[in-house]
Amino acid sequence: METDEQNGDFQRLHQLIPGTTDIKGFVDGVTRYAATTLSRATRARVECAVT
View 1: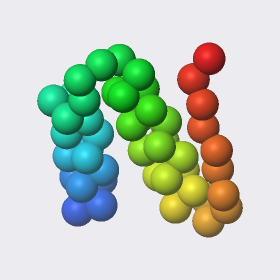
View 2: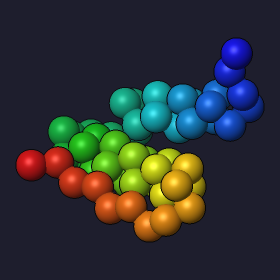
View 3: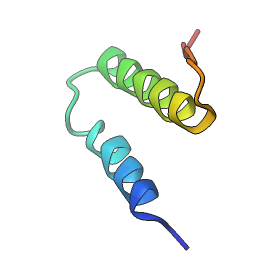
């Protein structure tokens, strides 16, 4: 069963696709999203990058 929080997270991730004009913008958005979501879940600062 999905929670409202999970639905909101999915919507934000889905909005990255049409909201960016290039792959760099999309990857930057995904890494920000991942860091924010993991930081919230663990209650510790998490940094994220793609190499």
